Structure formats: structure tokens, C-alpha cells
Length: 146
Image (cartoon, rainbow, N blue to C red; front, side, top):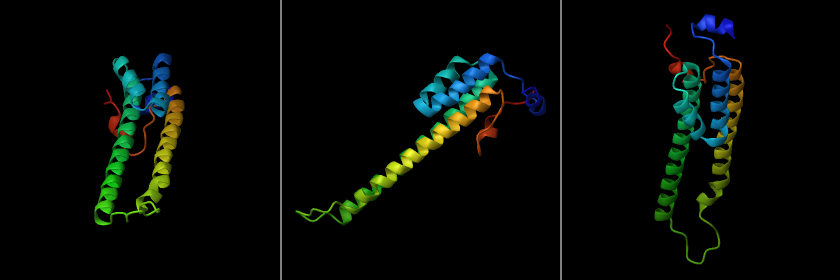
């Protein structure tokens, strides 16, 4: 803990800060963006807690953005299929896009599993006092060194 703070030039967090940062990650996995947002608003005076809660918030924003984009594309394709190939009257077969619903459900459940895994792994790291960053965007959120 102290060695990492010395290497990166960032202060070592207190026990309370480590607990709040851990909660931000765990709550992200189970409450979406609400838990990290509350912790971010409550602990404005701690750079460590703000850093970890922002990481959880950004991850959840990316996940929600991708989910909404995927849903919009799916509905656009669905409407296009229905307009260009309307179902025949008295047909018992569902439209072809209904066969993709299980894959859509698996995609959303896969995203939730990734959120849970990230939440647990980074909660453990935050509880150890590490300034651990999420892959790809985490280093952008590191506070300026003093």
C-alpha cells in the first residue's frame, strides 16, 4: 500500500476512504450508477474515493451507452424488416428477428456478469488501498500528481 503510493506519487488512503471506494465498486455491480454517484457526491473531499467512484460511473455509462445503442439498432432493423417484409396473414411462424431475442438476452447478461466481475475485482483492490485503474480509460481519471 505505502509502496504504491510512493511509486505513483499519490497519497495513501485512510481506512474510511478504502471502505467507501470499495463500496463504490460493489454498488456499481448491483445498483448501476446510483451507488457510485451517491458515494461520489458524499465524499467530495477524498481524491481516492472520487477516483474509484468515477471509474465505476464511467464504466456504467459506457455499458449503458452500448446497451442503448444496441437496442436502437435492433429496433431499427426490426422495423425495417417489418416494413419491407410484412408477415403473411394467418401465418403461424413468428418474424425472423424473434429468433435473436435469446442472443440479445445473453448479451445483456454477459455485460452484467462483466460488471459484477469488475466490481468485485476493483473493490478488492480499492480495499487494499491501490490506485488501480480500469483497462483502457482508467488512467485518464488519475488525479494530477502534486
